[in-house]
Image (cartoon, rainbow over all chains, first blue to last red; front, side, top):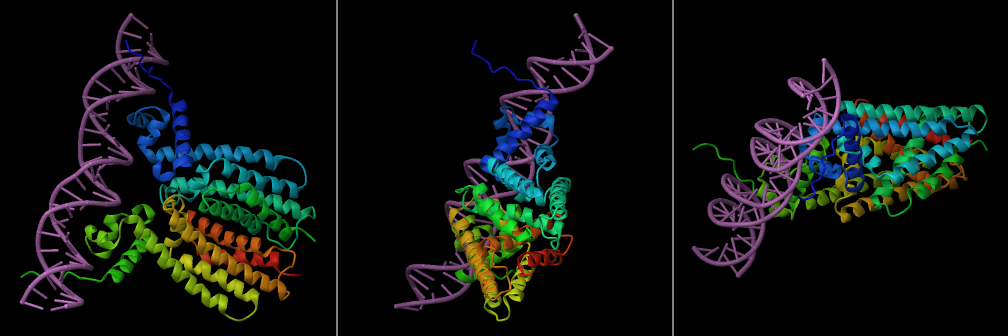
Length: 203
Length: 203
DNA sequence: TTAGTTAGTGAATATTTACTCACATTTTAG
DNA sequence: CTAAAATGTGAGTAAATATTCACTAACTAA
């Protein structure tokens, strides 16, 4: 008898996670447009029909994916926000980590900018907005801490500045993508940081 | 005899422009995913086949569209950059106009963030990158002028600051989109401006 | 006028899409 | 052990996609 592929039977949770991860990998490598039920099934190594044993539809796969990477990301950031040291160094580390995270997974910005995220599923949009908001809040607190300890100028608005901070990541990412990922996002981004620091630090 | 639709015969240039404009309208109203040969043809009021009399393929329609709106945009900005007055007010007016432009045509950010722009056609990507670069250069010069005239702090890097300026527009637009266009982009954006001005102006 | 080019069409094309169905096999609960 | 539930599959499906084709009608130059 010819060697048959053993049917790798997995339980629900394992498969759901596996499928969501495969989806993210496809987005990272080939973009959101290439995320089809066919490509996902192939990437996981199962049949298309089987996807529907674990998810109601394609949208739900997207949703699970955002859930998972959202948790991953917040978990990673928690370590930095919670660490000790002066607020300036800490804020810089957050910025560096944010850039590193994006550079190591192009799927994230692709998803952030995608129409699926902006027009699709309202739930999805709100889930993601909540993630950004939570992140901005952390940056905001860090900036305020910096002001209280006399590192950052007291005249600046800490929340608006936090938004500006995220804006710097955005624009760096956008340019990096338009230039075909040809340069280092981290390197370019950190040059932006230097100027940002000049803007907000006390003389 | 029943009223026949008169075949509205148009010359090449008129039709190309008309088609490109229709495409932009579709993106603005229904997103890039909804931009299909069928939807374009319907919006213009011609047959799908006729699209191919005027464009080689769908990609070329996209390309023409970017060309047209790119020129439009640079033309509009020229007036502001060229106007007199102090650099601070001028820069503020540029920011305001940029936000107004986006708010009055959601198609622009949709296109900017779209995969078609980032992964598709290399020519398209470069065309758009050139547009941003040209724009950033203008902002850069304006900031430098402000520094020379003693309005802006001399320690800041004018080019990095120009990029930060565009980043503020980006992040404001992204949040506006994620919130379902429910608030005024111009209003929210201008609050960001106030803080930006505090950051870069001399005390 | 006439002949050639340009602008127009409806109908067809091959692929690709998300999703379903009937049926097989494995796991698990009683 | 046995029956039900869960996980798996190949072979569909209808709808949508970009593009082509054979043909018609309208302008334009000689």
